[in-house]
Image 1 (cartoon, one colour):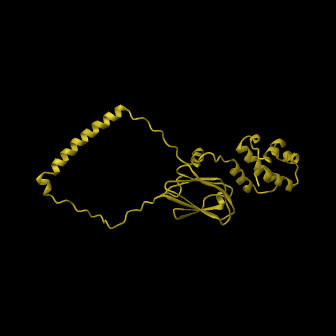
Image 2 (cartoon, rainbow, N blue to C red):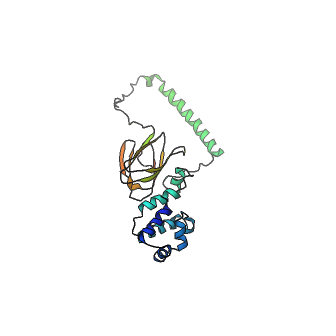
Length: 238
């Protein structure tokens, strides 16, 4: 059921006509009618439409979390990549524009390399002298048997609906949308990529996350729209 039909059912179940609801909510009747037709443009934009939906739900005595999840799923522009959505909401860091390398910098760098080569040649000459060769090299006391920190390749995210349902969109490092839809109570989905995964969760309080084998748990509140980015070594790089 769409947002408009849900709002219409709310109003009818509460026993209000459009005019009565408009009088109590102070929302123009024409805007209420448009909302019930899934036309959110006359409400003044997504922010105002969201506020009207909350007001209508409150007056009708109904919780607004489910209808707001539907609203997000209908209005989030999936034609954009998840990377764009994250950037618009200041979740990911914008890539800095690289400045062109100047000829002055290149000249300085070349001079530095020339000096470095001269110094390196002098050091090699000293090390090759008989006196230097007679000195016993210091032993390396580091225990080479100790394993170094493992570097994980790729990222794996498990999503499980533990408190109702949620609309979810998942995109990988290439911008390809791997999934866009609902995850229902008890349902579990696994997503992988060799670099990064970008997530938009419409009802953060319903979804439990496991990232690279680490149980993150429920990442947000019921009805909260959450945007996250996960990589191989960090739980949340957003």
